[in-house]
Amino acid sequence: VGSATTRWRMAAACALIALAAPACAPRAAEKAATPLAVMLPPSERPFWDPIARRFEETHPGVRVDLVEGPQSTDLRENLYTASLLARDPTFDLVYMDVTWTAKFAAAGWLLPLDGSLTPEELARFLPAALSAGEFEGRLYRVPVRTDVGLLYYRRDLLEAAGLRPPETFEELRRDAAALQSPPGAWGFVWQGKQYEGLVCDYLEVLRGHGGYWVDPKTLSVGLDRPEALAALAFLVRCIRPDPISPPGVTTYQEEESRRLFQDGRAVFLRNWPYAWRLAQSEDSPIRGRVGVLAMVHEPGARSAGTLGGWGLGISRYSRHPDLAMEFIRAATTLEAQRVLCAPTGYAPARMEAYRDTALLSANPFLRELERLHAYAVPRPVIARYALASDILQRHLSAALAGSDVPEHALREAARETRAMVGGSRTAPAAAEARP
Ligand code: GLC
Image (cartoon, rainbow, N blue to C red):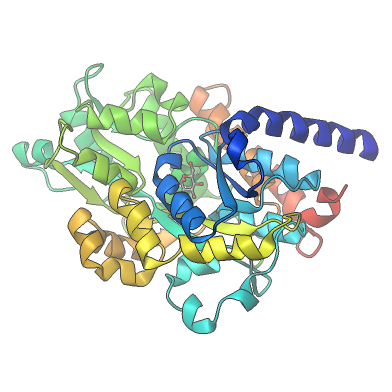
């Protein structure tokens, strides 16, 4: 079975990478250049382009290939996994979500980077962003940008109705219901599709109810506790019986929900910092009418925003690891942070960027963002994170779709999660990942 699985995985990796190849096919004159490749989401590629071209200028004979992968983090993780399992040297750099570090490092797919950066250099990054790149005391990923889940609202609509921004889930529900006029304009839009984004949204509601998913230290699972049920009940109630979210919310990723909000068709939006910059763009119908908060919470519990973010690691199978490290350095300077974060509104990973006049004038929201980062809560750092997330996604999704009741969905999710994490602390993905 093992070797058949391995063969299948290798075939899948080759097929998938062949699919991605046209995006990085070298022009004839460039064929002799040393390639350095990384896979990114299509939405980020235009903003990485100037960083890549600048690196080529300062490194004659090097060609940086920015390969566009699928937009969702789960699908890109699968592609990288297939490639790394096959020991494929195509990707030198791994552009990684915060949740990938433990799995990729435990599997031995990444080179440790701590020796390549001095403690002074490392101290320049936001501590939470930096520690998302660590596994068992070593650094495998240098943070480029960070993320935190936020609650956006239509300040103009709330003010006109004499309402203060909500603090609790009940107030959010009540205000959304009072201000919506469906189907033209909905109360609350978020990410309800079965993918990682749903886990991020649920985790914020769960924390805001005082609950937890997996405690990374004790491996205790909190999904069948009353807080977890109350959190899922809140999301289900957004959809029925008195909806404040459109029926289509169960198919939304970040962009679907943002577009609706930006078109003026929603009162509240859960999304990441990039949505602010777009809401304020010249052609945005809601420019100047948006407020932002940390996610609401139950009385007595605390607001939480899921910690997200992206960083660069180096593949163990890269043929050019030193060059890849040089690229990481170049991609994480203050100047590179300006290039990437000024036009996009991404939250930089370097602390000094939050005081940088160029960045602040491009995005004054950075000041507030620094404050909102205080609410950031990481997802559990476990090597089998992707499996835990799959289990949760599946059961949350069944409850949202109405094909399962929340109690049963969460009981099953808790049972499967316990069976999966139980006893797996020290023997994580490595054993199953190595062909
Ligand atoms: C953002 C976050 C990332 C998260 C993803 C979910 O890209 O930075 O951490 O996993 O959204 O869709």
